Image 1 (cartoon, one colour):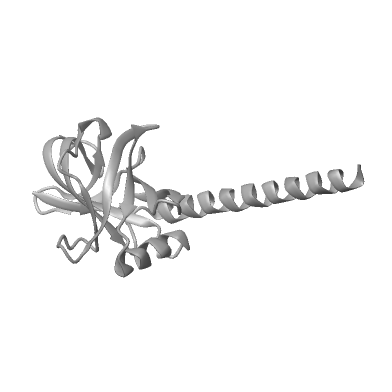
Image 2: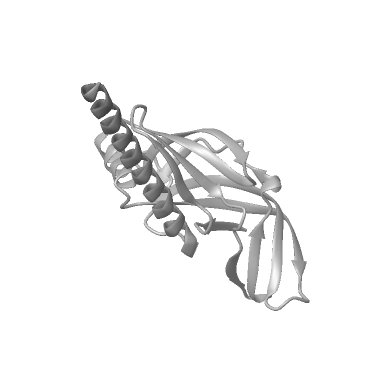
Length: 184
């Protein structure tokens, strides 16, 4: 069974020089509400330690894997702070650069994984039922307009806010240093 999920993915870092964006593909708080005809409503959580991603090489647009929708190369997949993180190096064609710019400008913030469940545990006693996916294969990563994680946008905005504050602080420190030099 294949699933698509955007609940945990968010923009992490931007490097304009090399057209690179870092994303959290699966966060450490990725529980997501799901529905199954047998289980009914349930909560699904991905155990990051069980993630397989050897075949994950390309970021696509809108869960439509095709040559025309390939927009970035995926590199450096790693676990940081119990989150699955990757770097995406965007292609230099116009369409890919438009999407890169939308992330850069804060218009887009989310990515979404496509994955196949290999192993899971079901706790039918909890309400709602809880499924912990202990092993899964991520076969696709896509740029999307909105993920299921309500906090993904908030976290991205907080990261942007921190960058703005840092830039303002650095600019003021430079101004103060120039003033000191001009006075002395």
